[in-house]
Image 1 (cartoon, rainbow, N blue to C red):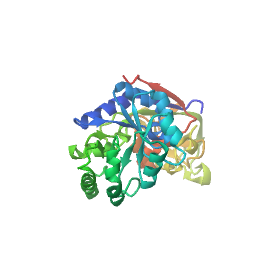
Image 2: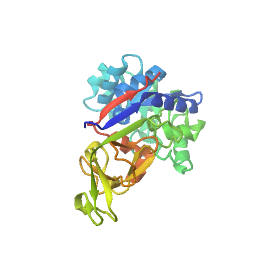
Image 3: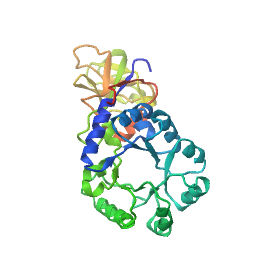
Image 4: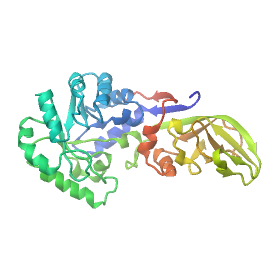
Length: 348
């Protein structure tokens, strides 16, 4: 979209990784690059983190791993959360990916298709999403450990709530299932890192915190999104704006129409709740967010703006997400491909 500019600060991503690596203590910090680096571009984010010292990366699917391998070259390890799925064999082999095997079926597939190829193991410690359950693990563990897995991992369900009893329950289950294995282990993503050393084990996996999101409250902001003003019009009292007459002016107002909408990842649920900014001055959205446009009340501004910011230092991804009734992850990963993207910093 002409004029809509999404700026991504690679130096801020690296600074966030270094901060979370420091918070991991003596434990190595990997980096989660799934969903195209949470929508910000794995081919740019991955090399910046590798340059900063990250050597182990995590993606959701083998297709993502193939893209990241082309960006990183040989050397760094790339783990695949979804494991070894049907049809993944060639990609895993060709791009030196390490599948995190999630089930007895995946174990059998991997052994048959790629005997001797590196692998890791994912265990279910109570989230009931991915990973082998304890009974399956007990049946297979001796043979799998003999094969030399690179990593055993699990994922915390409630790590963003430090006092949630699920954290301690999953930690106990993970220890029960893995303490006698002698294999490198990983339990903590961003939230788990912040829970403290008991959760760190041999490797942490910072994800959302790299990109400026909670629960890492100390994260540097990473994204800046500016939206161009298409038109400004005067609206009389009692006139309406947008589809469904969703907003009615209570007094004479000036309404700017911005060139962005839910086709660009600025979801319809922001209607009537979110704000954009002219510098540090907030301007409320009015009317419904539509596919390509949204209305903003700029009556209180001293001069007509050419652009307004929806992601900036005054409003980060989680603040915007709160206004939309969602989470920062969804805001980041929904940002569309119509923005003019630019990167600042070198990631050094």
